[in-house]
Length: 222
Image 1 (spheres, helix red, strand yellow):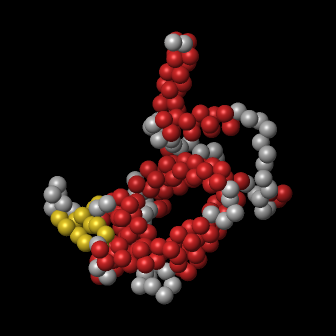
Image 2 (cartoon, rainbow, N blue to C red; image 1 turned 30 degrees about the vertical axis):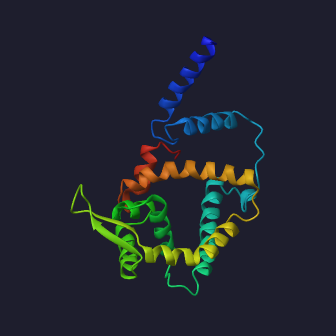
Image 3 (cartoon, rainbow, N blue to C red; image 1 turned 45 degrees about the horizontal axis):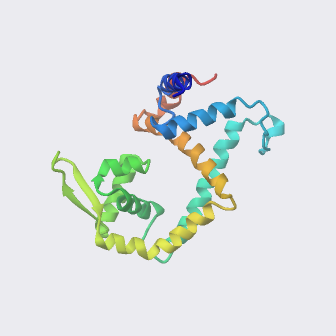
């Protein structure tokens, strides 16, 4: 056994745990692998910078990223709207809630709402609509009877399956002309961003304090 290499790996794992105190990466082998990849990437001084609109006038990459993400969200919503046309679904959130219930099984209302990154009032309106249509069923939790567990119903499964061909086509279109490798790299980067933002979202920080709190807690540049 190469004990020197083993010690180096252990030292690297210790460094990973210290630097990952805010859990930017998942605390498993996949997170460790991503951390290694990012360290190797950041060590490469020869970065091939892409062009973005307004770059020549000093527009920041952060501004470009924010705008592009907003644009992609709107494009995706347009395709989702097309996928549910001539159906009983009112919004894309209706079928996304059902997809989550089908994929992850029954959960509390708040677990489902948080999984979809919604505020409670918005999420409750969607759940109420799904209950009214008979697409989900609710039961009392054995652990806490104040909580209602919800799951997709047979009627909800049928409604979802009826639209799944169009929904899958919509998701294919959103991925556009990316190659398989580009899709994998994009998933890696979006996962990293999601792991950064979700804990902040889960704290339910008041809107008026949100930016100030995050800037101070995560030591962003001024």
